[in-house]
Length: 396
View 1 (cartoon, rainbow, N blue to C red):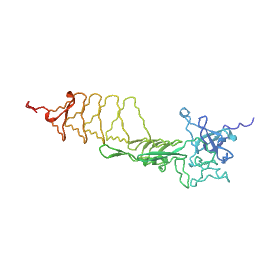
View 2 (cartoon, one colour):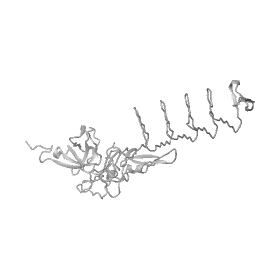
View 3 (cartoon, rainbow, N blue to C red):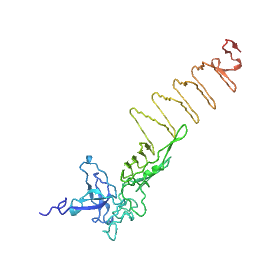
């Protein structure tokens, strides 16, 4: 019998290195199509992406429930061929971070085995040749259905985002490492920089305002652990000394962030809906200001009690209405004043009483009229109205 072939037998163990071109595994088990340096041609016209073999991921023995983390397009990976020189059964063992655009052997059409360009040189993006990150400006061979990242623009009062293939604007003249910028201490061109431009403030009803804290980002490599998804979601756990943060960001710009001093900022760039099935307690030991630009509604199906240990003021720019289905009471421990620049009406469907334990003054700058519905609603002039005074006399 001849020597067994493949599967790591002596003399037939073949290492390889390549670039991921397709991560849309129809089986959902983490496989990727990889173009291998020195083994596959870089010209996609001769070897299209869809004809590349699937490479299987190696997972650690303690991987919970065989959980799969998808490898991004353009990632440089290495592994071995289980079928030896046949080269159709690939296994991925790890990634190699050499550059975001992953330049490598085989890019040079005239010299397929030329050394990879250095990180200081600029490798053009193209969809016709492999071994480069071809998500943008690509030809007909680019894999479709890939997520698109978003470029977020924020101001203090608005937020918008535009989908594009890449989030970062690549610097002219060099390739970037594929380590996330935020993990390398670079905020330029990132979604976190957009947050810096969108600082909001809350106007207080009394006077002044409360401003959103400034962006505390001050990460230094290698202390900021960043997870970036295919479409541009972020999770940051930053252990930079003196600048420790936790931040989670949606691709549209919505985020929450815990600052180094424990301050927490939450910003939602669209609608927010919150439901609590049980009890909820909210305690603010400092100033609490709520600023609503649109209409504000508060509806309660049970009793409402509003209490303050000091002064209370309700101010309306135009009209103010207080309605009660049964009883309405305004009570003051000392003085009470009802004042209006225009008309004032006190109306009761039943009896109306005005009681005073001190003096009662009624002043009118114009005509004072009394109407009695018992006599047909006729107007009784004040000079014919009989009044009782404290001496028991009747005055016509």
